[in-house]
Length: 612
View 1: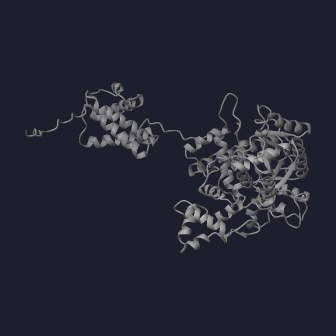
View 2: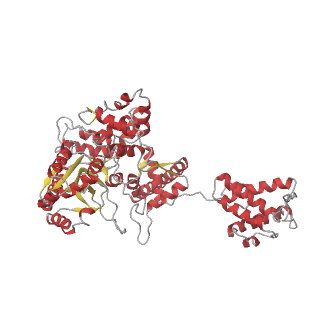
View 3: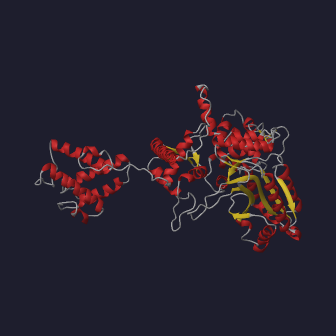
């Protein structure tokens, strides 16, 4: 039986859309949104699809609301366009066919003008159009304070062009009525919440991690206007006060602080710079008198300290900070004993979350409540150079077995503080029932002190731990009692090595350039976003025999896995690749990494099959 022949015929033509005018408008709106990269293009496309399927003619945009994906916004736009269409083509113009000839061109131009008006464009093209107001933050608001602070910081000599969150909040607080860190009662928003608005308005730029904030060109122009307005108000107030004083006859005594008029003009810039540095200079002179003229470290602290970021002697308290894990969870009775002992010894301490370490000390600024405000101003807190990691012998055993021991030491080295201390508590008879032999634990303690450079303090129980913390707190209070403390950023610290000159010891001259607690704790977050370099360092430290110093030395030459693999690819022979890293120097003694570790790393990254 022959197969049935295939019938060939014309397809039934699809009916044309009975609302071509609405379809044209929606298509132009979709294309315009697509050019701008707006997500509303998808909304318009859905409306177009619905309109194409609707077989009946529509008289206006309001009737289109029965269709799917047509909301109030689209219907309102169609009605506005329809009214304009009637004004240009007459009331009797048909809405069910497209205009032809020159009117089509005028029609498209009108549509473009309409979209510009909708987007807040030039209102001068049409009569009666309202121009969108420019965003200007209210005086004494969070956005106002942030813009002015960044602008003034950018005008300082030697400005780095950006500010970190903590220093920006500290500097901007004096220009804002609300707190940047504490929300108002009944609200969850602070003055810092306005930063997101500044970023959306393209006035502020946020980059890097930790975040760096800087002004865009629009933000710089707006900040200049705000600054000029601020100066104008200040000048007006001064003029008014001066005139009132002259009228009353109580003329203030004028003190001339300017330089002699016969000085050369070439020194003008130096005089201005000296005026900007005046607070720091005065402070550092006082600090130099306390320390003595032979100290070279004080000069380095002065040079590295930013203008205005310091705490004067007597303006701060030394406070012990205790990690909340040391007071809650686990053996609560034993942990509460530590708190009671510190209270019994009369030590001022604060329990908070520490992302690294168990105990540290901060210099907290003394603040007084402001009349009319619910909460006192936010106090500056600078972290002293000492940090303590506390370990019971059983905890030390567990951390060695699960790998936390090496990771904690690595994070302590990188936290930015230069005096790490390991406080080791004996656990009495329980030491005989631990998973590792006592000799292994003792060797780990010795390695921590000799190899890693930590100071190790061994105590018998919780009371001795509390006694050590008490002695350390009182020692630091005496050590820093006459010191001016400067705040600096870890980003600008460099290697952080401060050499002590002329034989001056740490007891006579403590390190006075410190980082803020906010920046310290944020930088020590364990699970924050990591760079490729950080991940590579962690990979290397998983290899037996590679410490933090050795990993850091390798990273100085090859910062990523990719750069190391490229170096291996350039080696002519396998033997040359195995010896590639053997001559890298590490540590203070600058010893070679050695051929054995170099071969191990080469085999790990270059062996295709399983390792033997």
